[in-house]
Image 1 (cartoon, rainbow, N blue to C red):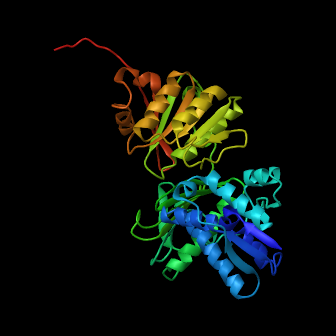
Image 2: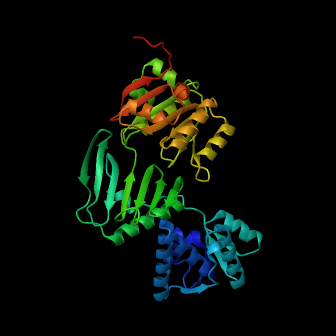
Image 3: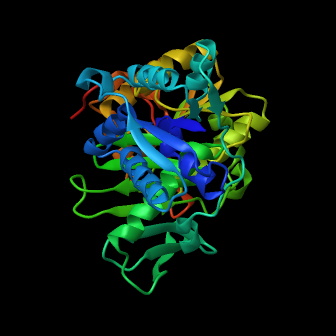
Length: 407
């Protein structure tokens, strides 16, 4: 049997999985040079998917040496312009598959549809629904907020709750680069395979992955001095009643004519409060959406979570205006562009809850000044709720007044 795997089944580890299970024993595995070129390009850009894919090809070479498969490289190396264009690479892979009279293996639904439309033999491997136990999950225990893994260092974890935590060792020996690489490959494969999992951000030297409720940031040189993996997950999920808010504050939160900023330092519980507000508004019958990057709020299935559209939150906001929600949770408002989008949506009449980093409530106001016209600030956001150690520390109401000078 002749098999041509495309980039998708190599990156997610499905082709090596089938060989390990004995389903492709003695098969002729033909790797298009276009696949190697694409993975090499991604690896040169520092993308984890490229490095993971090249590791899978090394594993295929090992299977070839063991006599489990026959491995060959076919086709010509594409031009730099074609490598930079994903659709062109897919077309080259289909052409090689057709010329070789081989079965195209893919986990890319669009690739499978196009190949089928052109009469090419294709085997579509559906995403696995069952989540496998990842090595990184073994570092998590009861009450673990985050795990910090760094090449050449002992693994550490942060345990407790926002404002009340301790740093503890979760391993006895220093992690080797090979172990870190294996974990990163596992994470990338899981992100491609598991439901509700995404590669949210992939740039040179850094990859951000959302695996269900777990957010994983992988950094390597040149972005960081050493390879490191940081994984965080929520330890508590609270309802709005847990915050013991008075009725006036609840009414303020559920009034779409108001804009609310939730502020606090990193790890203080801002997002936990924001998702509690989102659930509260949903239960009151409101249509709620979120804008997140990455999408790590733990909200109900009825609440749609939007990511940047074509890497732009402005484009996401354009779509949200067409969807017409009652409320939007914007996590997080940090850059000048985020504040501009927040103001634009707020003035369009959408109820907004924005999440921003600030050490004090007044610092959140300072972040608005200079980014939003001074006289417009109360119309954009008239309420600041400051969270510290998982609790509401201060609530500010903003209003614009004009007084006569005296003295």
